[in-house]
Image 1 (tube, helix red, strand yellow):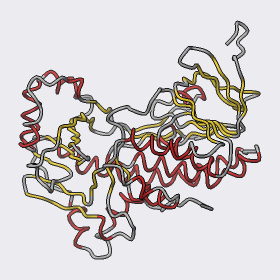
Image 2 (image 1 turned 180 degrees about the vertical axis):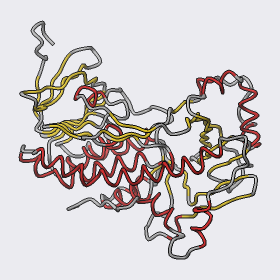
Image 3 (image 1 turned 90 degrees about the horizontal axis):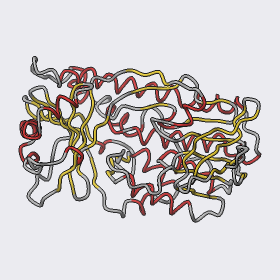
Image 4 (image 1 turned 135 degrees about the vertical axis):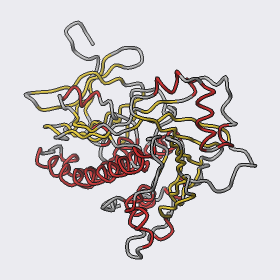
Length: 411
């Protein structure tokens, strides 16, 4: 940027998307497939950031299948989760499995998000209208008379650039810079827990079948089977990480051993806390997802709890609905505020519904599980559902698809 504040170059496109996560990447791919010029700005120089959402639900696999990409994606090494089950002091409880659902993909695929994003980026690069800029640190909105006309960003050499477009899409995650610049404030709740993510190697001698979650003595651990390792989520009361760390690694290993003895053996007593990742759990939504020329999707609009691992999939559904509803308006360069409001209307009730389901699970399972003063018992509602024929598939259907299936229009 010059001394007068003018960027070194100004480029024009039909849509500029900030954030190369699942929502931004899928939206850019869908627009590029329709020959709509799109520029995707990603702040990092690569996609390799650990402990991000790695769960690809049937809803997303069906969307990829519409695009002819699902089978190719599933050729990458991945794990599969086919059921949700809990191990408690009373034994094993199976909430349900995906086998009763009408889908080609009766499971959750567990694949490192970096590999997923790289796969999508390579597919998008096949289209001349797709432009990906890595290392683009967006710092400002370009506005005229209250209308967002694009963004200004710094590259890795600290040079300023401007991209102008009829529509700017904020897909830059839970700490969205664009949301902040636009003056939007999320309204959130405070779920009763945080999560410490860890990964340990898988061995040939490991159990071939494990529960999804282990509960006991005021502790809870979620366990996910990846291609060559186990990903564990040690759940503890909100803002309790300092207490967990102060107790020391031996105490942490013992907490894991209480729940899954064979897993604790993989965590060395001298392990470094930096090998783990703390997720401060929240659930929130901005009241308005848009202003003239700007749309928020994914975590920028609504941060999801990790319950059910659904966040990445709802972000992708946002992207699909955005492409379904706005592609022609973007192509013509005339995206009305009414169009953006209609998109929010279509997506907001879905997100609010599933956030309420997550809140129920947090209040009825997680909070009691973390109460060491009372023996844990599965909520009666969840104990009854598997016994009712026309309701037994409901929990898994909500996990797999939510209250509404989303399809790509005009593939």
